[in-house]
Every structure is written in C-alpha cells, then in structure tokens.
Image (cartoon, rainbow, N blue to C red; front, top):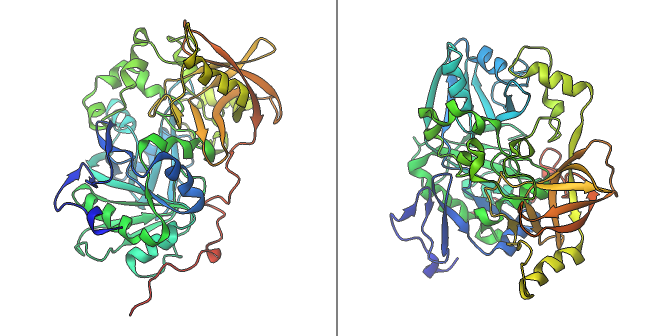
Length: 459
C-alpha cells in the first residue's frame, strides 16, 4: 500500500474506511458497502491464491437470546439438536415454517449455559419469540462482521495480532486483541466463512469497524489481500457450495405478511427483494413464473442440509421435513453451462431484434438476487430450477446452483431456460457437475501445518 492510498482520517462509509482507490459503493442490506474493491477478477481469485477481507454481512445486527429457557426456545425453532452444543462453539441454525421451507438460517454461537448469539440473520427468531410468547430475552447490537478468507488468511491475522492463531478450530471462536485498538474493545475471531476454503470472521462493535477493517487490510499487504465487494461475493458461495438466503434463494419468512410488517423486520435492513416475495404481483426475475414463489424457496434437503435435521425434538416444520426425509425429491447440484450457448447469448447483444437477457459479470442478476429462478428441463420435462448465473474466472466457466430431481447424476445434460418470463428465452445446455464445485481443501479439513507463520519478525 502506498502513501497516497492511506485512509482519510475519520472518513468512513458505514463500517469500512473510505479508500481513494475504491470507486464504487452500493446500498446493500440498507447500508453502503463496497461494491467492487480491487477489481472483480482479482477478487475472484483471492480465496484460491491469497486472501480477502469483506464487510458484506455487516449491517445485520447481532441477536442475543438469553435466559434459562433460551435453549428450549432455540430447540423449538430450529432443526438442529441444540442440546449437544459445547459452550464456545458455533452451529449453523436452520429454522423452518410449518411447510418445511427454510424461513431463516444463520451462524449462532453459544456463550454460556443460557446465552446464544446469531449473526448475519434476519430477525425471524425474535419475531417468533414474540409471537410464540417465549420466555426468552432478546437483544440487538450493531456490530461489524468481517470475513477474512483464502490460503493466506491465517497469515494475515497472525501478522495483525503479532502472535500465532492456530488454536482456533473449525466453528470455534475466541477473543482477539488488535494492536492499536483500545484494549477494552471486545473483538472475537471465529474460524468460519463462505469461501469454501480456509476462512475466518472478525466481529466487534460497529463504531470500531473502520479502524479494524483498515488494520486487517494493512496487515495483509505483504500477502496480496484484496477488498472483496458485493459484486463478486456470491461467486464464492456458488463455487464453494453454500446456498444463501437472499442470494441463491428466498427465505420463506419474507412471504409472511405479519413478519414483513413487524417492527423487528426493519431492524435487519432486509434486502430489497423482500417486498417482491411478499407481493408476487411486482414480478421476480428468471424464466420461472414471476409469481411462482415456491420456485425461489428451498427446504433443507433441497440445499443438501438434510443432515443437520435431528428428529429427536419437536420443532416448527418437523412433520413436513420428516415426510420429505423419508423420500427426498430434489437436491442441489452445480451446473456447468455450455460455452457456445453462453457466447450465443452475448452475440445476441450485437444482432438486430430482441436480444437474450445479457450477462453481468461475474453474477447475473447482481446480488443479492435470491428471487431469480430459471426453469431446468431434460428431454422437455421440468426437472428443477437454477439460481443466478455466475462466471467463475478461476475456472473460466459459467456455473450455477440448481435444485434438480434427486436421481440426476454427474455428467447428465440438462437445459437451463435463460431469460425472464415472457421475454426471449435461450435454451442453454448445461452439465450436472460436482457439488461443491471448488476442488480445494475445505475450511474444516484445512491443514494449518501447511500454512507458514504470519508473525512478523521483530527487529
């Protein structure tokens, strides 16, 4: 980083500094975030060859559930077994509606016997706590949430704090002290992320966000760290095999009219596609019918999360999910799109007449875009739906997540009906591929012994 790239004192955009070389910020989740930080191609490569820092999940409050009945409440509203949960670890909590559709999901940590915190989540559980009359205390706190990911991410964080950080296991978390940040500021690090490879999160009070972000960015200068913006963010979800509400599907909570008008809903600064889910007449993108909300929603088995469900407790949506568990109908796969058909879509922009819906690289529609759904057929029969199209610069391929009939196998060829309902549709050939598509070591299995120390030598 050069001197002329330094951060103007006291100048920030929500929870990130104003960098002179970042030209584009976007209104995402109700607040301004970096849209493109260091060029989408560099950003697309970062979690395979270096590291990135991203603030994309900041803006959604930390939600705390506490009290002697907090665990009972979480058990009632999630498919997970929340009693087999060591203090100081995290779980991916998944909540359903009565029809077995995913209403909300989010990373949740257990701080003590009777206190739990959830991150990056819409306030569906606070809404249920009130409507169910649960005896649980719910509090909100505005925090920064930064994702630091890629093979050099551990080195970046070790350079940041000046000591090794090998003791944080997958899904674990612990307090972190950052030089230059007041000692009484509570910051924690967690080994979790959406990159599909080695990844961490930093969390702390929002007012200290810009200085923490900048400290990480400067610590990562020797490791080629980039600032990942929303333009590229969902590429890592798609490559890494992470379904995400608001991006690859819509949570059914958005379709609950009482939730959409509840005061708690405004606390989450929800994505702009929430009103569309609650009012289908406004239309949703993709070749699937614009009023077909079900094509944009998912069950746990449809996104390959069925293994999280434990039928050893009563929870909302259990009957529907248990029935699906007996005979799962669909699953998520990666589709690799045919290059010639993709080029035909691009070529149509230069021909007379109605063109095909164009591609915006690296994701179309730009995220968050959970309302997008394209029909997928095989031999003229509908077999599923595909979410937003993603150009993987790493693989030089167009790919997407698709929920397809469970008997589809790797190598099968299907047709993605690309375009918006009622407009010109391009039948794009696509091949069912591995899921997840990223073929690098996962965060859970990453060998930290293969990562050189990031602690800088002291002169």
